Amino acid sequence: MPRLIVGMTGASGAALGVRLLEALRQLPDVETHLVMSRWARTTIELETPYTAGEVAKLANVTYRPGDQAAAISSGSFQTDGMVVVPCSMKTVAGIRTGYADNLIGRAADVVLKERRRLLLIPRETPLSEIHLDNLLALARMGVTILPLMPAFYNNPTSIDDILDHLVARVFDQFGLPAPHAHRWQGVHTARTADSATTTQSTLTGGLGQR
Amino acid sequence: MADQRNVTFAITGAGGTRVARYVLESLVKDDRVERVDLIVSATGRKIIAHETGLDSVGEAVEMVLGGPSPKVVNWDPEDLAGGPTSGSYPSWGMLVVPCALGVVGRIAHGTANTLIERAADVTLKERRPLILCVRETPFNLIHLRNMTQITEAGGTIYPVIPTFYNLPSSVDQVYEEFTARLLGFLGLPQTDYYTYSGDETPAHRDRVES
Image (cartoon, rainbow over all chains, first blue to last red):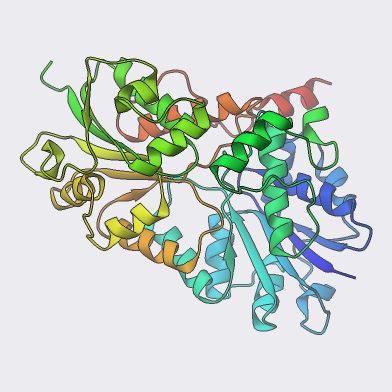
């Protein structure tokens, strides 16, 4: 059974974290372990129609960010990796330097030492030299940096389309099935596909339906 | 007006040419901008054609804006002797929207094989603002190293990443907001964009009021 750690931190883009949790919930085989930082809770309440408590219920297990004794603090607790979404630049800096001052930083540290997959979804623009240097160092350690950047080849017509596409790309990173993902296959194929089908909302109903 | 500026504007082969159109429209209608030197790469043309359904032949400005503009000067990207190839040619700075990661790599290494990379090279040597709106996710190690190098050389990496704290309700709104922020960054502040204040978002207000 795939077991994923999901960290949510205080960058803008909480909607993607919520959307990812909703989509993972549709996969009965996947077990999710969630940690929301203090500022993630604030951002969730500012940017989405959910309360942090409602988001916590989307995961199989939720930990408090100060709970350094949680299962995911130890490499002996096996996981398939971790995604931090959205990932603040403070968290990027903390992970890069091994400064595990909360459970998100500690869990990421463990994922790295155990050579498991770590995926960070920063939402920041423009990027300073500090940001880029930290992201580069992490990429050198094998971390996947997947900025929260919309694609265009899927012809998004709504914010949900943008988020669903990114969720599918996150699924791709963990080898999870995303059968409805819109995939670029060259200009000619894209033209034909666009005229033949309409863009489908791929995953579960979520923010856009509220 | 003495303080009007000339802006060099390049469009390269990445998704998001719709954003390029928003930015170019904003520059053209801004009284603070005297002239825009437009350079569209060959792949940029193909992607504009794909994303707009238009033909990929004709003047670049007409492809992007749908018609000519007296403020826009078209340059052939293959014309390495074009005006922007020299630091003596008046330019306030250069924007690349969207910026393909191959272009980032060539700029990072001074490989001036088209007028776009040469103009960027000149912009850096003249210590003028160079802003690259990359559209790519995830980033690999090479992307991050090249972007770090350009930042060290004085350029700015400005990924096409939306903000969520303004609670965008449509894709167009995402890119209008991005454009306004980008122009503000260039020193052309716009009046109609959302400024984060800490607590005032529609979702938050709805919850407080209900």
